[in-house]
Length: 333
Ligand code: ATP
Image (tube, rainbow, N blue to C red; front, side):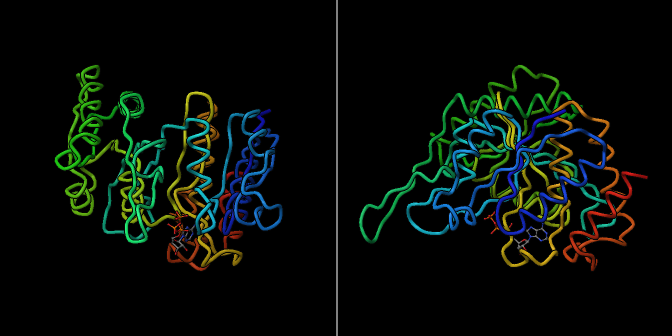
């Protein structure tokens, strides 16, 4: 029996977390779900974005499946996602992106993983107003955070028999910050002589990714570049509806889709549940339940491959619930 925190989140979050829960339960795994919520809906109801019970549950279980959380727009609200990643030092944001047979895209053999540094960099949102007409943001890069994310990427390459790690940077312009990140990548790579370290500047990387994405296997980069590149890569494999993710630290892991709360389709039973279901499969793998994780992945791939019960974003006409039920049926069969 596993104790796992489940955070439904906002927008399409409750719909897709419900799908992932159903699919995981269909594998027969015994889970005690500790359901707690955070985000804009909770704020409207309780006046706090993240109630204490969320922190308590995370600290107790140390593992969570989480739907997207909306941070209200406006001053005074900092991103909850960023806050959770920082508070629990979930330094590794891991996003596997793979071509799925049955999804129409010009790219046939994308198979890469983005390792995004998750705790610092420009994405931290450290900003200040200088005057009414100017503002500035601070980009912090540290040796400690850079070394550990690059090491995570190389360790993944070793475990998964990959031959190359690509570090993405802009060190030609940001010589101190990105320069330090690049130096750390070079330093770590010395311990992995059988794996090539490829260095690519971020703007060139964007072009390379849309021209020939299959040349890349493992990408490691800073927080903001990782955010942007992983959405770009999502576009190569069928969109945000199919890309899972994990935030992993030394003592805790939170699994969540790359997509946001998608307010345009929220509550319409139209969201593609694949991304969160595959995030759930990543979570089972992390727990050592590889067989059950593979069962979920195969059921998802088969459902999409058959094309009968797929959501609108994938070119189908099924609802979230119909697609989920089709996946569950394959697992039970
Ligand atoms: P955030 O800033 O919170 O990451 P975002 O503004 O980047 O969010 P998303 O909420 O991820 O955007 O949505 C971007 C687009 O992708 C929207 O049109 C949305 O409907 C679509 N989308 C996102 N997730 C899904 C999904 N699971 N199924 C179908 N469409 C989705």
